[in-house]
Every structure is written in C-alpha cells, then in structure tokens.
Image 1 (cartoon, protein in one colour):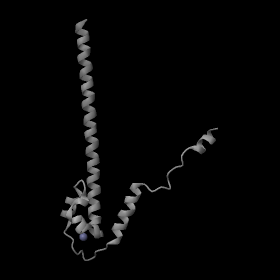
Image 2 (tube, helix red, strand yellow):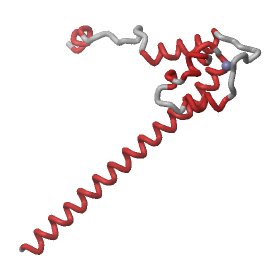
Image 3 (cartoon, helix red, strand yellow):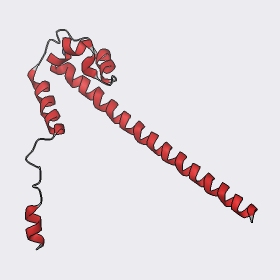
Image 4 (cartoon, helix red, strand yellow):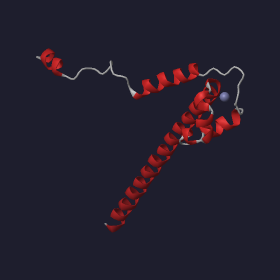
Length: 122
Ligand SMILES: [Zn+2]
C-alpha cells in the first residue's frame, strides 16, 4: 500500500539543474575563460569592492567594460561579493531577531497592562 502510493509521488528533481547550480557553472566558466596574465585594463581592487557592494553589480559601467571579460578581476570581485552577501545575510537575521524581540516585549507589556486592569477592576 505505502509502496504503491510512493510510486505515484513526483520524482525527485535531482536531475534538474537548479539556478544555484547554473550560477556556479557560469561562475566557473567565467573564472577560466578570460585569463589576463598581464592584467590589461585592470583597475585594482577598490573598484571591484565598490561593485560588489552594489545591489546589482552588473549595472556598474566597469562590469560591461572589463570585469565580464577578465577572470582575475572576476575572481577578486566574487570574493568581495561572497563576503558582502554573507554580511547582508547576518544583518537581515539580526534585524529579524530584533523585530521578534520587540513584538514579544509588546505582547508581554500588553498582557501585564490587561492583567493589572483586570486585577484593579475587581
Ligand atoms: Zn581585470
């Protein structure tokens, strides 16, 4: 019985490529495809960090102009980007924690107030 039901369940999607996997494949390709040993056109790490801190890094003019076709710069950019995304994730979790704490505090205050009103009204 359980076996028959299991057979009709939708198949696991292991064979499908997730967007995360696709991103990783593209990243690997970009890291290999444009070796630039002489670092022609590179402008140092500062501009790469600046790009990584943007919400949409590929809207930065230096992206189209250079980083898109330069594996070493893309490597540095990716390191900055991962660092920044991790930081944003931490900040978001912290904000969520603060919000939950505030809501809990508000509920506690509300309960205390209604409790004391109830007690004094008796
Ligand atoms: Zn470069």
